[in-house]
Picture 1 (cartoon, rainbow, N blue to C red):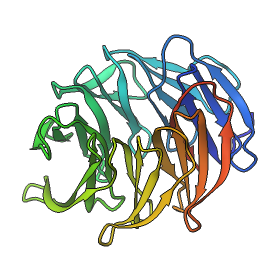
Picture 2 (cartoon, rainbow, N blue to C red; picture 1 turned 30 degrees about the horizontal axis):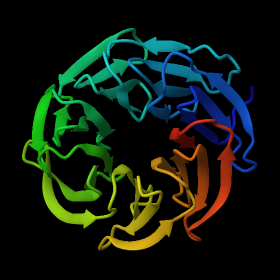
Picture 3 (cartoon, helix red, strand yellow; picture 1 turned 135 degrees about the vertical axis):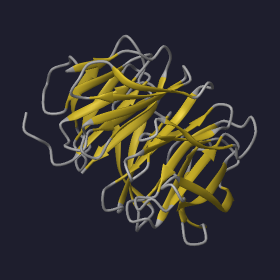
Length: 305
């Protein structure tokens, strides 16, 4: 297979991963995944591989192959893997699981290289743009910063006790972090560099974004917008300058589980329980393409353009 210029993939409770032609909406490859559902998809920085976070393993697939077999399987977690991502050079991968751990994997070596105990089930993990800190959010409402140089937890926050942190997102320049929870609230902090180069959190804003769960929050590449995907069937777009509501994306018929921006921030892809993924024009606030083919809830999507 030739390398696609845009890699767009979705996964569903129908136990398949699908690859789509972004412009035409045609599904050109389906990977059957009978032994688990997929919780999260992430594409490597070089566009060569797709990571699928499952229960309880992570599998890496070749983007440019028709083979249904993974090129690598990462086993060490003992429960649902809810988060997966890559260091900017693609040398290592991080993950978070309902088993209460955050792990780091060297993609050039077998096995898990580091493990951090969060105790409660981990729902979300993001890598700070400095590439030296992981930030995790868990089911008990804790946010923790894991300093990869000191190999320890350097900071802990609890924005709302016993309210699960569902999603975290960090601004591309490392100046802001947003946490979204099960009560439809986003907490926003300004990130400051501390005395020992440790990241410090300064409260900036509390946003009541939705009446239902927020399942994903995501800052746009240009640091201009915050997208919040919700169980209320909508995705809301907020201007980070004052957190005013810019647009509400309506079209999905059920919960919206995931969203991802194009690299220029002009488009957003969403995944929903209505079995579809959709492509939205950010300037217009309108749906421009529907990706249909899954037979059950579409719960995650990945885009690399």
